[in-house]
Amino acid sequence: MDTTRLLRIGELAFPGFVVGFIAGVVAGGLAGIVGQPAGWALVSTISLGIPLGLLGAGYGLLAAYRKVRIGAFAPMALYWLIAFPIARLVHEMLTWLLLTGNARLPEDPLGFLAYQALVSAGFAIGFLWLHERLAPRWWRKVADHNTDAALVYRAYAEHAKQVYQAREARRANRDRSRATQR
Image (cartoon, rainbow, N blue to C red):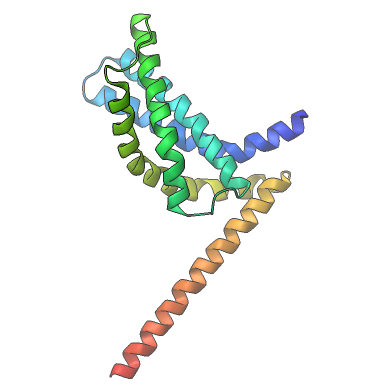
């Protein structure tokens, strides 16, 4: 694979990475707010932000290559049902490694993973919301030199048009129905 192709793939994955990394930054900020030392907050930012960023980039590529339906929650939730617990497990192990010098699993790894899987739905909602707002704008920006980005941006624009037309049709039907009831 040549460098140009890798850069184009990176441009497609970039919004997902940013959204995932932002989640890690928020986690680090929250660690600082609740009184954890600055070093601990920085470790949280890095050890959670990078795995979530990489997994977010993976989802971004799935969306860009239309392996998942644009704007749909179910595929996103299924993706993060697996990906979020993995990211949290990496976060937990890296945190212990960076702070104590010894990586270790949580005391009850299966319980930990099950709980993280439950929490993943909330993360998926936030990820979808932010990704759907950032990614199309980014892909439009790079579309002039990245044909894959141009294609996915057009798909997003068409999807937005269909959603708008469906909403307007429902509104018109509702207005007609109200008018006939009077």
